[in-house]
Structure formats: structure tokens, C-alpha cells
Image (cartoon, rainbow, N blue to C red):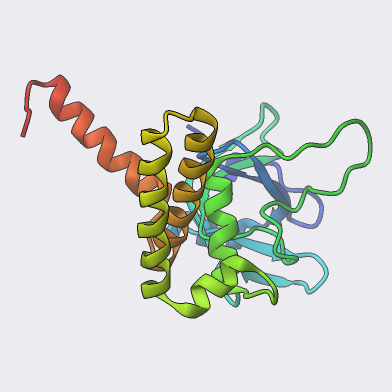
Length: 211
């Protein structure tokens, strides 16, 4: 394992940091760190960068709430670039996009779907409401409205299954999943929380504990 003194900062004392969503593998942004911001990132466990335009440190999410919890930091083979894997609490881009890399320049550009990415988008809608957005409407109406929709979609799933219509069932399950993710965002939960609970139960059953 190397330490900060082994890193190769440029003539301005900066090193590029590629930020990647740990769950989806999506590249969220490219920012820069100096020794101080890297130290803060390691100490606090959330990304802190150095703004080249403002000439000062900035903590990701300090105003928007879209913080990035750091999972790991690695360097490339030359120790002159960082890869920071994070669990994002919302969109990475100031535009509200999940990633800063969304403008196509060459070739086919198709955003890779993931449940984690959708959840991040929903969290972004909660923190930054957008007029005309159905998701914003649900958050505005509050948890009772969201719970009502979860109940309605659950009933629709049951009906589709009873009708033995797989296409209809797929669509209704998608609707239920979406509204369940909205509920999770409303209550401060994430897909990672659900994966963790399922993993705990799986481990118990593999170990012979059926409780």
C-alpha cells in the first residue's frame, strides 16, 4: 500500500481523481485533489476536491446534499491519477444528471440502466424538485400518497399474475419497483440497504439458520 507522499502531484500540486459509482461502475465525474483535500477525503470519508477555477477546496454535496461516501481510493500504475469508488447520495453533476459524462461526442452513447442509477435520480428529484415531474409530484404529496401508489401497484401485480399475462406482469412489476424505490428515497433507504439485508438472510440460510 502506498501513501500520499508516494503520489505524483502536478506542478500546481494537483492530481486528477476519477469518481466511480461502486455499485454500478458508472464514471460519475473527473475532479482534482491536492494534498489537503485528499487528506480530508480520507479522514472524513466523503469526497473533497480542489476547485481550479475558484482556487479553493470544496466538499461534494456541501450545498446540494449530494454527498459521495468513499468506499476505496486506488492509484494508477504511475501514481499520478486516482480512482475513487463511492456510494453517491444523489446526482454527481450540477445539472442534475446522474453523471457528468452525458454529452455524446463520438459513437453510440447509450446510458447504462441500473437500479442504483434510478435510485440516485429519484433522490435527485427529491432534493432538487422539477416542475412537471411525476416523481417530484409524489415527493410533494408525501409518504401517504407514495404508500397508496405502492398498494395500488401491488394489487395490479396480483391481477396480472392471475391473468397469466407475462407482459402485463412485467410492466406492473416495473411500476411496483419504481414506486418502491420512490418510497425508499423518501425514507432515506437505498438499494444497498436491501442488498445488505438479503445478503444477511442468504448467509444465514447457507449456514443452516432458517430463522
